[in-house]
Amino acid sequence: MTQVNSQLNLMQQFSQLLNFSFCEFTANGQLVTQVQRDMAVTLNLEQVQRQLDLFRTEQPQLFSVNHWRLLILYLPKITNQHWNGFWLCFISLDTPTINHTTRDKDATLKLAATLYLALYHRTTTVKTRLTPKLDALIADYSLRDLLLEELKTNEVTHYRNMNSIYEQEKLFLAAISAGNLKRAESLGDQLLATPEYIGMLSNDPQRRVKEFIIVTVVIVTRAANAGGVPSGESYFKGDKLIRKAEKSVNLENYKSFTQQIITYYTQLVQHYRQKNLPTAVYQVEQYLQQHIYQSLTVEQVAAALQRPAATLSRTIKQSTGLSLKQFILQRKITESRYLLQFSQRSIQEIATLLNFADPSHFTRVFRHYTGQTPSQFRH
Image (cartoon, rainbow, N blue to C red; front, side, top):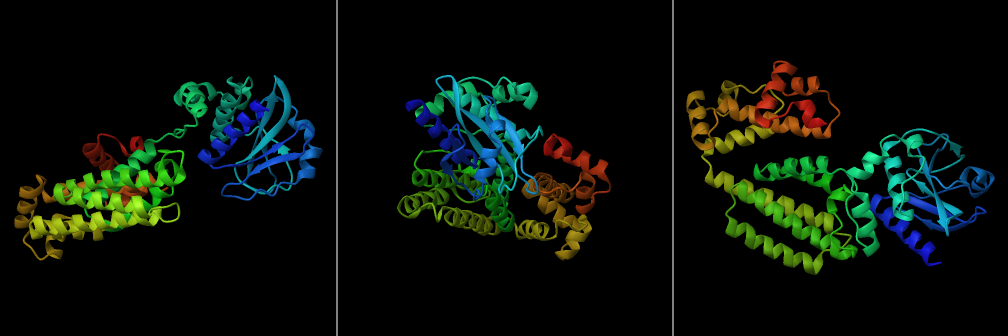
């Protein structure tokens, strides 16, 4: 009984961490446990019992559902080295019929390997049939250390490649430092919609979101400092926000509280940039934020701001170390990083959208400012 309870506990932890629903069945197909996440399972139990022979195996399998965009991951229940039932994990929902499939779905297969290793301390023997990459995936995620050790102590960790989230966070902090409120709020929304970004700082959900707020305040404070906010003021305001979070943040309001932090600090950056930068530099920044998708030459920007081009360029150079032309290109590359990260537009489309002469020109400029080609950055 202890082994069974331990297996169920692991399944529940993974279900919460990776956001899938699952059902637990006995050897004769009777439903004994049902765990729901974001989607409601409407499994036809008669169908399951009619297809019971498909589930009498000690290895993971994948099944598809006709007429629905859904994958079901089958995992065996093994007690005392014998098959004793099974779990069905739902990667999407609603199931009129079940059919066996050999479709290679990378994320689901990664989950299969992870769960199987956690439950039975061994890798699946049919990994070559499921996918040739399972060994590499297990090594990449250090499952033997992170999974088998940390989950034994009721701790959890990230199982997803975090590189894309890290790139997203860099763009988010850069938007705050630039005082770009619309972009900062948009990127904040996207990060908050990513469960891995919240992290697993505590096993207590309430404590977890409060600690997430503390981390957010710390990194946003640093971004505000980089944007010109005096460190004394930003740290003092951060301490106040953390104390307020300790008293009032909960599972229902932590996202709105986070957005308030983002808005407050970005507007604080706007205030100090307007106060500390030469008026012409601040006006150029604001103009570029609002017109980044237009053709932006030195002469056009200067004319729009009703300033002599040579004088404006000299002022920008003195304040930023960049010529006005370089300053414009740098802002366009920042925008292109956002498009590469969060849109499906081709590199050619992005080059055209941002008014580069051609994709080759865009690639040369992108490499100059980032050290990568657009394709390398996207992938």
